[in-house]
Figure (cartoon, rainbow, N blue to C red):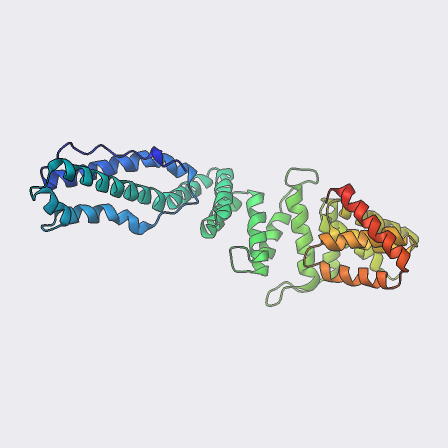
Length: 347
């Protein structure tokens, strides 16, 4: 950050009176504070130490007090030039510290109020401010800005609030609060293929997961039929989670016919293409079970390496069971094939 933007007024050539010095300090601080406002737009992530903001008044009061070291120095008969130099450097440092502290201490709160006020008529501005606040760790301001934007129909803000509560990200985790925000997104009239498609697809998938197991201590009870409906709708909106869950549903049916297996494979392949590593692992297992041992083991291996903490345990169990019943030469070929897949994917 370029601090040269802050300009301190040049002190008088001679300081002959303590009142003149104090008035000069006040005048310089006002000018420095006005000039430093140009920093505000570029430094929301810096909140100045508010204690520094009081340093200038304290300094002025001290100078006015009889017996103060600087006061005595000025009026004790010391060389005027030497005193002037010491006073100029000291006051300039105090001015710069105080002006910067005043600028930074209240900048973020002021911008928050302005953004919230703007959000009532411009939800996109409130959303952008919420994003900046979130990125810089100001969670309370982020939540407030997202709420204001959400109330004005900004679907991205509603989705972000849902995610924050679902994951305990900057707020206390609250699955029921997340559920209600996801439900609000689902209730919006958004067509597949629109700009907001991904928000709706993700919300539908999360709704499916919530109603699949229920939310303890809330009105949301387990409802497998409703979950299947949510997953199917999520898949139609392009959600990898929805596509994965639909593929699993076809696999888990007791009367899984060849046609249902093909449908399962299609949904899993689509989910894997969209980055779902659980779907990739399940596809690998299908290949393994169908006799394509090397390809199946290689897919399960790469999926295990890339999977998140939620999917990794069951993928590991599935992969280890497959390796345990595979001959050594086939294992080596599978490892080589996994290396090829990593190179192909650029990982």
